[in-house]
Image 1 (tube, one colour):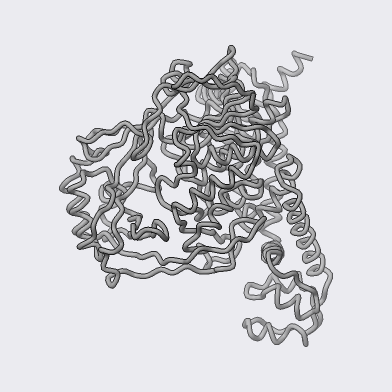
Image 2 (image 1 turned 30 degrees about the horizontal axis):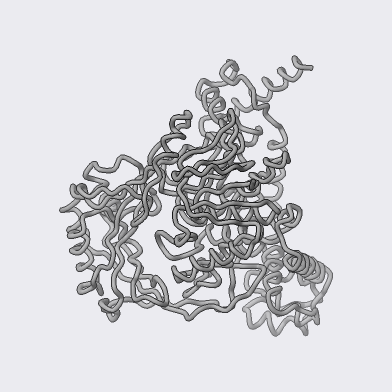
Length: 622
């Protein structure tokens, strides 16, 4: 028998399997097709604002997304570079085929992971505990915990226009119906969301002379902290626009859209809208930006990012021809919308276990999220906790001040979703603490404690932590003289020194750079991958005051988090709380006062009264 069964081979499932296996558990990953493990079903890109930091957090746990992205990057850009390194956001355009192959290879390199092609028909239950699964071909497979990562496959339905409706989890793959019906029959609350994808075009038929070229940058950067693989051959992206002609074609055909013609009832993502949504909701916009992104090195196909649609094929052909540079472009695949089941995540614990079914975990789009990175992040946490729960150990929860993964999961289980959830930096209260450059420092020690890092990875972590500490100490104790510093200060447009000054104090000036000051003072600098430690130290020193304020706020949040709320509190009986607060607290059943405070509709006075109710109950029990 295996310890953990993972259902689904997408980004959540692959990371769940990898995380559990790295903790020493025997894992069985079941997917309907082994050929589509790690498939990038939509945009072939990894990272971006907030998302890039999540990829680095996954990597700090030894995950596979960063390693697969590094192996398949055909264009890399660091977003937000004009705003300073504290908010930099790495993003990689990937070769879709290389990425998928890399994911499977990384899974198969772990002897604790077994792969099985099959479709799960039902969960096996003993009372309210998951003990395995049954496949459609009759196999019964036992496990100590089950992680369901079904993506858009649960009763998935593809829409192209109002007439074409195809059951499927994505184009070419069947929907999962049996297990969706079982989950609903078990009493879990279920709802529908929708997402979509744009058409693809043959790059040989594009007039690139009318497009703006966008090349990559920072060839030295890698997502992974633990390895440095060579990049494949690089490719440019291209920028064009959907103007008034495109908008008019769409306006004339809105009733033919599955979304606006009534064929779809599920809500779609606000921040990755279809082109129909853009035309309807932003009528004053003169034009909408479109990116033509390469699908890979072995194909001329281009992904038309910005034209996600559920319009009929003939309408898609018309509006493509109205885009500058695409007048004669040949469409290789039409865009489509897909509608699918998800389970409102207030039904989950903060460690992603289904409250009603012990040792059953949900991760990915089944929880109402959108995006590869959000799915993979949930997979890591579900994989960790499936193993710990199976072994009778306390689950792991990540705080909002610890990781974007913690922000994501807390938002899901506390605030719920009314549209597909996408992670943004604005969702994090402590985003200066949660940077892409310090992900390893934040989460590496926990990964080491959980046994998720190999011996050479532990050595890399230790070197990184020691180097940061050495650089911080050197910066705070070393004084640089006017003779050593003034040449650089003049170059940076900063006022000269009159007397020796500590480097830590001098580097707070906006244009001053730590590297040059350390070298000028004779401090030895590490080379290679450890140079990222230098960036982190410079940010820590330059934004020290802001960071300390965030840390103080995080400590206050931690104090509230330490005020635990019993799981069996009779919230509906607490008349000192508002009706809305009682109902929402009873529905979500928060773990702590801090989590209760993040529930919409629970006021500060409700929190104060809740504390009094809990203290009164404790006295009664005592």
